[in-house]
Length: 359
Image (cartoon, rainbow, N blue to C red; front, top):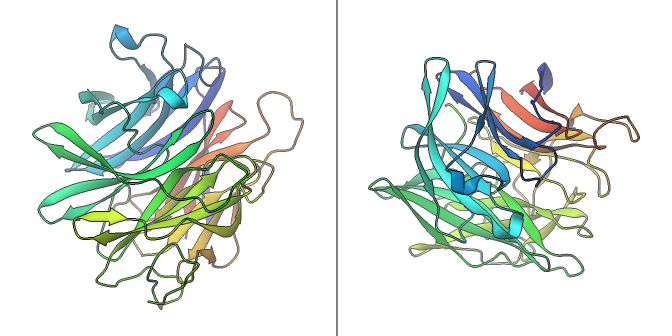
């Protein structure tokens, strides 16, 4: 792996966070939330396309309600966007829409509120695949309250122009002493799936019941699974892994989440399954600090994911620098039309970094 290019996005607000990126007709579309600070009443969603930045403001009823966590995915041949509105994470209202290009501008179409209580994809792009005649978006979802964090696998299905949403049981967290697990970053093993790209052994400690036997590759067995890496709350100190398997018409998590060897400082992560079949994780390799930010290829063949080769350092900051916070965090991954990996991330909460990686 090597870094091919770096870009710096300058938001028009004092603070910014949670950037996402996708492509329309080969052109990048960026999204993030920005305002005085995270959660302030002036915080809204921003879109950037062909160098132009504009805020997204919905009906007057949402005025003064902060925006959060945009997520892109391809579904039904169109680019979809889900983001949140709410005073804080425990009262989010998810909004879904279609993003379309009109010349040098973007339009948001079919804007609708998801059912109250369904968060959809909270941080990372969903896994989109066919279930019989139905196209489903499998979403890594989570709910945060003052006392507890829980993660779920939610599905979204577009029928007659409306999103139908379903949720399974929460992921079991085997360890105590911290709030729980949030923001599942998903990928699929077995079968085919897509959401943001262009183009077996058994273990009692594993969150999944089957694994591929080929080093570094994903399972191609007839029994597909959806796997996830999850952020842990303060005191958790590590990334956890969960898995869902098909049980009749439902997808179930047969075991509690398993602790991996990857540290986590209570910070967002992302995973992408490249069109080559290789799987990559972007994360902060520390239990305490949100720096540096690295990209790590994963070996997905064991009881839990492990590193495959050396990580690629994408960004870092030093403690005590003037302005902003000491973090390079909240990565979001997509595959470029050329087959490279593009990572966008928060740089000190003052601007957005974008790194293109040749793999």
